[in-house]
Amino acid sequence: MNSLWIETTKNQLKLEPLEKDEETEVCVIGGGLFGLTIAYYLTRAGKKVTVIEKGEIGEKVSGNTTGKITSQHGLFYNYLISDYGEEYAKKYLQANEEAIRNIKGIIEREQIECDFCEKNSYVYTTKEDEVIELEKEIEAIKRIGGKAKLVTNIDLPFKIKSAIEFEKQAQFHPRKYMIGLAKSILTQNKIYNFTTAIDVKKEENQFIIYTDRGIIKSDYVVMATHYPILNVPGFYFSKMYQVTSYIIGIETNSKLPEGMYISAKEPIYSFRTAKYQEKEILLIGGSEHRTGEAISDNSKYENLEKMAKKLYPDCKVLFKWNTRDCISLDKIPYIGEFSNLMKNMYVGTGFKKWGMTFSNIAGKIITDKIIGKENIYENTFDSTRLNPIKNRWEVKNMVKESIESIAINKFKVQSHSIDEIENDNGAIIKIEGENVGIYKDKNGRIYAVKPICTHLKCLLTWNNIDKTWDCPCHGSRFDYMGRNIYEPAIKNLELYQDMNNGKNR
Ligand code: FES
Image 1 (tube, rainbow, N blue to C red):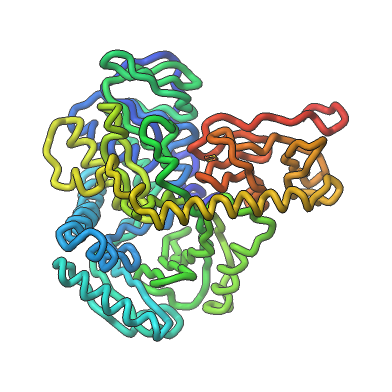
Image 2 (spheres, rainbow, N blue to C red; image 1 turned 120 degrees about the horizontal axis):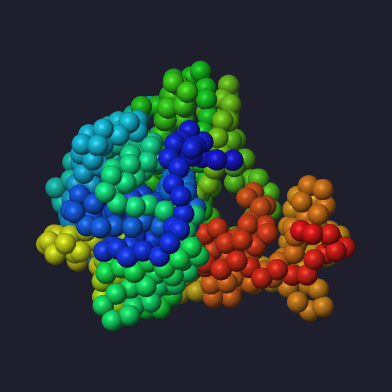
């Protein structure tokens, strides 16, 4: 099912693929929120820019977010102060606060109708033993000059023990905003849909971007693909993983809460309202897990539906969707040079779950780098920093989780035979000692692939919610026919032999 954002903006901006080789100043790979934001800023700075998007702009990760624009990133400032110091935490907060104002400014300047509205945001807890952590967090926020207050009453329909309130945060319709940015970019520059970057090489002072539709030559490259598609240099696969979370949109006759909310600790739930057909509906998010975990049933959505029914017994579910977030090992985004070994290529990734503000921050920092302007946040999110891989606890955790997922997969492989797989379901089975990924559609037709990720060869898992093959290592995803949907992999899966008695697949 499409997200509310994609469903309500279908066919609003039709863009063609690249048709012939091109030369440009800056090639932006990826037409999500970050790619379009940087292309917007560069266009305003008078640069010649070409954006290429594998699918349609704003339909991947950015079209599936919750669309909250906030500097309140869960319980985070106390962690920042203890690990990085007050000065650092202050800059992090300032950069995100500025991003809220920048986005508001762009919406006003370009007159983008995207349901933007200012809201208070809250991190809440329902547990007495977590109150102390909220108290520490508010103390930390105050030490760095942030404006926040502790409250015990919010308008969610259940009792809480405590919450931290940030005023003047915001929410919007992210895809309407992205279409507005794209229209502005298109007045001077180019955006191509259905154009997949396959490789990037540097020849003398120019980059050659190889795509499935032709070649683009450019002076600068911005890697805006959510997860970078180049392994070397940069090595982002060794310092970042992905998580998946789920959202449902419900309608109810009950009064809806006014603000934006997120629980302080696991299980994480988030709430915000949105407009749909002139009505307000409520979006409830949660059920997070590491991308690549095998999913055999609908329990991720069912958990959210159960909660919705408990809070709003008359509610009806209108939308269900899920999204992915890249998490860096030190929980700070990577913004800046792609690698010290590759000048003039830039990256913005690892935005955790706060891509609305970080897309703007990254767009500004990298634009300033390209046009040679100083930016006070340039070093705050430095993408070439070594701290993440020095953080041994996180590295150990990432390796442990990967090994566990792979071990669980292996166990699952042994527990299936082809006859045990029900229609409209999938699994990995062994055929003559080889792993084969089988999906049987509703009519029993078999789609067989080699379930080995084309990124760095991890064994994939079957995701029966989305009917996809997902990778537990870095979160690449492939549809049931083996076609690549999400990075870092870019190649499709190898097909296994036809198992439908010779009929064409
Ligand atoms: Fe890296 Fe699959 S995403 S190995």
